[in-house]
Length: 245
Image (cartoon, helix red, strand yellow):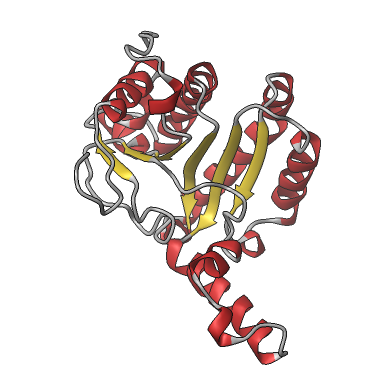
């Protein structure tokens, strides 16, 4: 992939948090007569490229939709291959992330993941918790509705035990109980493969996110494509419900 640099470098106009729906691995493999897992392996190269581009540009948070709660409906052999690939990269990539001052964090329903994967995730999070560069968030077994549901349940428990009054519940209360607690809402969402939907991803958090749908498949998405998305973002006017300035 080419490595075109940003055309605009004003940090004030860069997104603080970029979220990505990495779509098209299977289609990329099918078009080449390859098994779907080869598309996922090639997609891992695009993850590395996105992390490099985010780090170099000054983006502070990068959230990647790696595996949704709905993806458990996929064929058992594909899920097995995906979990194997996940374990491989958790073992292989964390040292490099740590070397580059990247903090690693996972959101999603860990109870659906294998104990060995959860152990690798927890070790990676502990190992990188003190890093101060890019925060890389991987959404695994994640669903936006489930995230909000879990937050509501947590808040309801506090109301039931008398530590929180219903009148005290506000938007900040809900945000603080989501899996993304402490992470700013995404400024920019990128989805590859030409699909134009958000697929139950960060539903509460994307109230004022700028959406960008690109035609290339995720294995074709490199640093140049990431930087073009940042350039396009900087040309958008964000009003957050107000009138144009």
